[in-house]
Length: 112
Length: 112
Image (cartoon, rainbow over all chains, first blue to last red):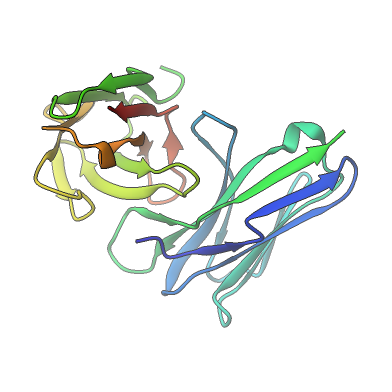
């Protein structure tokens, strides 16, 4: 069963606006990752934040992590129509498991 | 190759047929994962290999699902006696270290 919950499930914004997606998880983690998936395609890794980090930036992406609340957020600034995709958070547990546990995703639509 | 490849990209099977899905990981990647993604959901873990050893198969939904990686490179996911509930996208991912996973484009399986 999926561990993470993401909100909103769907988000529609105008080009140039910022998009914020949130993710919550349940267990202790080693790191949290965000992936992007275009319709009918595989997942593309966007950014990884470790459990001892609170914030990370990569280009137009900003990720925060609050381990006390077991939550993370992904901010995409100055959105573009090409950012339209589904975004998933995924956690790697702090135990011995090697697999990622994914959230249910946020469908982002950026209108030109 | 440059990335993870999967074949076939699309597979239609009649209920009760056996199917085999292939994954070619990135050369040199020790870890290989299979995930199942239902429509509108995030991927869910099926099984994990480290080289040729299947270290975790806890996500396989039934004994009709079988995976192998005999030479520690290419992997095959086999589903016997397919059922309609097996319809999903099957994603393969490989990784070098316990962090970022690189995903293939997936195989979309439709069971009629």
